[in-house]
Image (cartoon, rainbow, N blue to C red):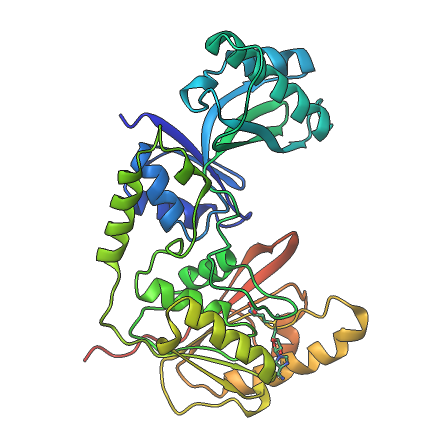
Length: 380
Ligand SMILES: C[S@@+](CC[C@H](N)C(=O)[O-])C[C@H]1O[C@@H](n2cnc3c(N)ncnc32)[C@H](O)[C@@H]1O
């Protein structure tokens, strides 16, 4: 059995997608909770998970889980964990983040300092040291407590996985790359079908779709914290994972993806981002307002993230926009469209009830993905 337990947090609502992604990488799922999945793998699995998981936020080495209703219990149980398996004598370790939900221990700063002290105590006795240099590689620790159940992990990722490295320019309300990848994967879109985002902003949905269509690993253009851990994860394993990603990448298919927006300046950002993601040849960006959007093509897909009108003064213009979207989309005979918005009355103004509605979180904001399924194209 693979010997490393990994836990990967994700946005609420994306657990089933992430579970499928992990299974596709070939790993066994241990447990699925709200916003977190735990699975078994090996050292290479740390590299492959970071490179490939499109809907995860980060990848943690799961160091242990226990109940703690007091700081004493937190200290003693943390001290029992074999931290020396991962943290070497000169490693730099600190509790990067502690969060607590419905638990007796709730002060993040106290949890952080108790956990750090317990790890120091453990490593002092194992390494027979009284003082740690902490001069070498990083081991950021994350503590999550829910209903007094503590879960502690070492972060292998660093900057959150949604930071693919291609998006340096964004619109006012950009969609996270992980959520954009999730939207694409929640639809039946396939790489041989036309895909349009008519309110594309900085291009996140078209770019993530192109990465998915061409099987490009989302983490190819960035580094990860665990790349520094050369004693536990030999460089060779990262190279193997990168080589695999380069082999899998589809260099031949030509996709038909289009991104439109009313704002020309944001389209310049979208083009730049697509170029950095090396998918600029796959996406046609053009200035166009939704009122002018039409197409003679059949069986296309729309996946889009319009403004939500969170501020009261924006509400009226958003209602008008949804009415315009309704008029434009409902003319597209045979198309399927998928719209994410936090605006409760979306269907009323859009003018059609969705075939399916799925609750998702855009950051902390509750939103719905309204799904309208068109017919499948006839088989040739
Ligand atoms: C929420 S943002 C989209 C963000 C995008 N998903 C991203 O990740 O950057 C909504 C976009 O709709 C565009 N928009 C607003 N009204 C429009 C209209 N009438 N026609 C076309 N685009 C419009 C805005 O310029 C903005 O870029």
